[in-house]
Length: 53
Image 1 (cartoon, rainbow, N blue to C red):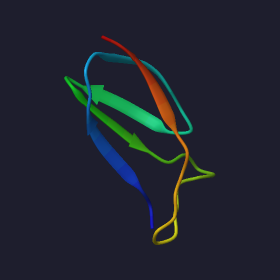
Image 2: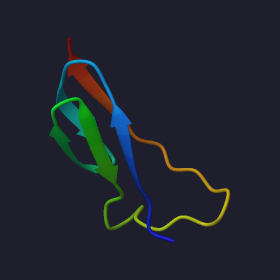
Image 3: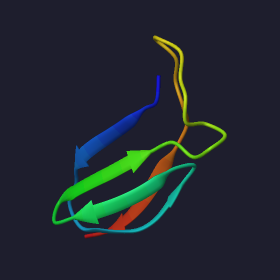
Image 4: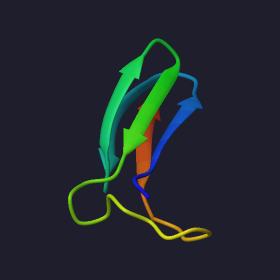
């Protein structure tokens, strides 16, 4: 399964790691890169972001 998430955040994202990301208003969208794009059911992927408020 290919994964992606959308989060509601405060502030503006200035960096993210282990994902392809985009931000529109207070919505941060993230999805996997080529090497971590797929995930097994009940699996996990590590990623993160930094934002300014």
